[in-house]
Amino acid sequence: KWAGPARSGPPLAILIRGGKVVNEDLSFMSDVYIENGKIADIGRNLKVPAGAQIIDATNMLVMPGGIDTHTHMELAFMGTKAVDDFYIGTKAALAGGTTMIMDFVIPQKGTSLLEAYDRWRSTADPKVCCDYSLHVAVTWWGEQVKREMATLAAEQGVNSFKMFMAYKDVFMLSDQELYSAFSQCKEVGAIAQVHAENGDLIAEGAKKMLALGITGPEGHEMCRPEAVEAEATQRAVTIAHAVNCPLYVVHVMSKSAAKVVSNARRDGRVVFGEPIAAGLGTDGTHCWHKDWAHAARFVMGPPLRPDPSTPGYLMDLLANDDLSVTGTDNCTFSVCQKALGKDDFTKIPNGVNGVEDRMSVIWEKGVHSGKMDENRYVAVTSSNAAKIFNFYPQKGRIATGSDADVLVWDPNSTRTISASTHHQAVDYNIFEGMVCHGVPVVTISRGKVVYERGELTVKAGAGRFVPRPPFSEFVYKRVRQREQVGSFCLSSVSPHHTITYSPFRAQ
Ligand code: URP
Ligand code: ZN
Ligand code: ZN
Ligand code: ZN
Image 1 (cartoon, rainbow, N blue to C red):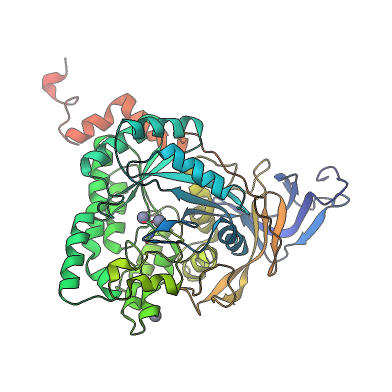
Image 2 (image 1 turned 180 degrees about the horizontal axis):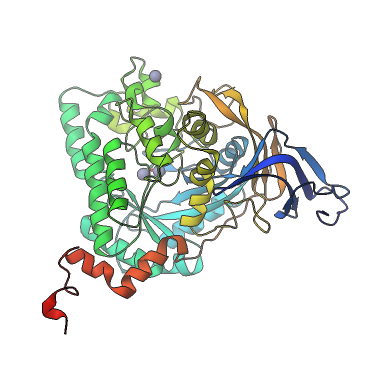
C-alpha cells in the first residue's frame, strides 16, 4: 500500500513503523503515516515515501497524544505568579507525552470575561509549543457576564465555564449565582465546571485552626476535610440537575466527593469527574512532614487527602468509568513562593505540578498495576477530554484525518521522576523518586517530532489555539433528548409517581 506522495524540503512526512496503535476502543498492529500535520494513512506495511522521516516503533505503542484538561500556566494567584509559563509548561507537557493543554482564563470579580480571554490569548499564543484551549471562569454574576458567556461560546471557541464554590470573597459564587451561571451554560451549549468546596466552611475552619495555633501546611487539610468537598459536589449536582445542565467536577480529590460523582452518574445525571495526576499518584500525608518546605509543596485545593488509600480508590473509579478524564491542575509555585505562607497556611499559594508526569503516573498506577487496560488509558488521558469538550476525533484518536498529535510509548521501560531531570520551571517535584513504567519515546505535535528520546525540538508559538464549538454531542445529546420528551422535568418531580403516569391525567 502506498502511503502518500513524497515532499521536497524539510520532512513534513513521518512514517511510524511497526508499532501497536492504541485507540480508546481497540488496539491493532499498524504503521501510521503523517503528512502536513495530519494523520494521512494507517495500515500494515505502508511504503516509505521519499524524504519521509522514519520512526521505528517496534515493541512500542502508538497512541493519541495526551490532553491535559486542567492547567494554570503563569497564573497570578494568591499574591504571586505560577512559575511554569506557557512556554516552559507546554515544553514540559510535550516531554511527558501530552500534546494539548486546556488552561483556565480567570477574570477578577467585576471584570470582563472577554477582556480576560483576550489577555490569556495574547499571553499564550506566542509562547505555546503545543496546541491549547481555554476554559473561562465565571467569578461574579451580572448581565454583562451572561452576555459575554454567550459571545465566548458562539464566537470564541469556549464551551466550558468554571465556577468556584470556594475562595470566599475572591472567586466564590453563591448558590443563586451558580444557578444563574449553570442556566446560562445550558442556554449557550457549554458544560458547567465546578471547583467543589464549601468556601464558607473553609473560611470558618481556617480561623479555627489558626486560633488553635495550627499554622503549618497540615492546617490546610484540617480546615477543609472531605465532607467540605463532598457537600459542595452534591450541591453542584443538585443545582445542575435543577436546570438540566451538564456538569464537570474539576479536581476530584477525595473518596467522598468521588462517591458523589459516581452516585450521580448511577442516578442518570450528565456528570463527569476529573481526578488529577497528583490525586492519583500521591497523597496528603506529605503535608504532615516535619520539613515545612517539603510539606508545603503538596498544598493545593481541594487538598490531597491524608487517607493513603485515596489514590488507589480514585484510580479504581477512573478505571470503571465512575470518573471520566484526567488533568493535572498544574499550578506551580517554587519553595520560595510557597514560603509566603511560612507562618500561616492560608497564605501558602495553592498548587502542584503534574503536566509533565501525568502520562507516566497514570500508566504506572493505572495500567502497570492492572487496574485499567491500554485502551481505557487512552480514553482517560486523551479521547474522553476530546469528546466532552467537543474536538473529537480532531484529537484524541489515531485516525485518518485527525491531527497528528501522536505519542510513541514504551510500556516496558521505566523512568524515575525527579526535579533534577524534569523540564518544568518549578524547583521540586511532588512525584520525586517515583519509578514509572511507561516512558514517552517520541512525541509528535502538529505533525512534527518535538521530542525524541530525551531531546526536545520545540518552538515557542508553534502550538495553535483549538476553538471548541458549543453543544458537544457527547454531552448534549442526552440533555436535549430529555428536554424533548420531558423526562427531565418529570423525573425531578418523582421517579415513580410522575404526572404523566397518573391515572387521573391519562385522558
Ligand atoms: O490549588 C489549586 N487547585 N490551585 C489552582 C487553582 C484552582 O482552584 O484550580
Ligand atoms: Zn479549582
Ligand atoms: Zn513527603
Ligand atoms: Zn485548577
